[in-house]
Length: 403
Image (cartoon, rainbow, N blue to C red; front, top):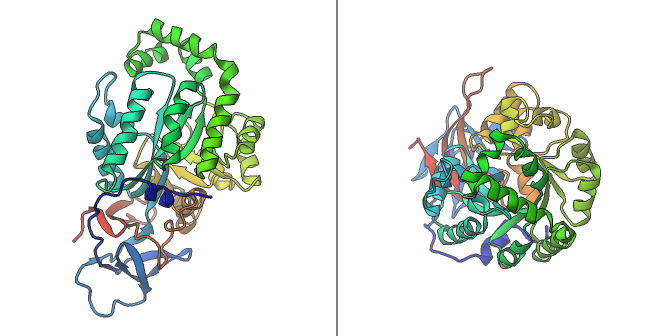
């Protein structure tokens, strides 16, 4: 990628960060060079300074990882569970900074060290509207350096939101937005409004009556001739800034080809095995939801099962989607069921998303890389129940239950 989240961070405001401590982790079986081996990991100034076979002189600050696994931190390319922190019940809102802090604590506790909040900017008002989007972008800027996870904004731009281009343009240019995804849920929402149970969600989410929302949907649909120009303009902004682009919910090969031509070389949640296979054949990453693995399939009827795609080599990245514990547990589930060895399965949540996003400074345990690490008690053999006992973000303890 021409630009990555590390470069994007440089464009953000630079608050004073806590000094990264010197730290040594001993006794753990670390995932190094594709295999687990007992190693001593020495951390200095937020980076992995050395990977050694013995500790040498005991460090002043050390973590005993005996009996545990040391893994690269989870890079969550798309997580939107923070929406429940913002609005835990329909129409009930909490302050943005407080909601982000809650989500941050949960993510750190489940081993997420780099987070891309999937913020939907839609033509709808309310939870996914302009006011919420701008508040979230502003809050992330002001909280940078105070959150536990390295947190960025994954723009889920509803492509019928023509008037929203003016809002996102400066945020793409200055690095506030680290990833751009093209979303088009207009037809799905129209289908929902035919179902009284599904239609009942929208008044709480938008603040409109059901009839008011139907009228808005009609007005948005009337602007369909503007769609191609809006998509092209957004792709141009992202390409100029070097921001990675994703297509979302590609239903067919034609849709994938169209977004590929615009520079979107990551396919997120493809709606068929054929689309996933096409993307992988083109050397592109395919993103699926880790909750899909845990549930044994998608919660949407007819969508591909993520575990089957992983087993066939057609899914290269798993993400939390709507449930932050999912990446950790899904990887251990895949390994426990024999789909992939754990060392290879862990690439789905660390090395592969790092590569897709151009993050050369993380995703693996190597000297010189960021000390984004998690220490995990894997649970009993044959029935893995992973328990994160420590999460380090750039060498700092973002979460810890150990001394």
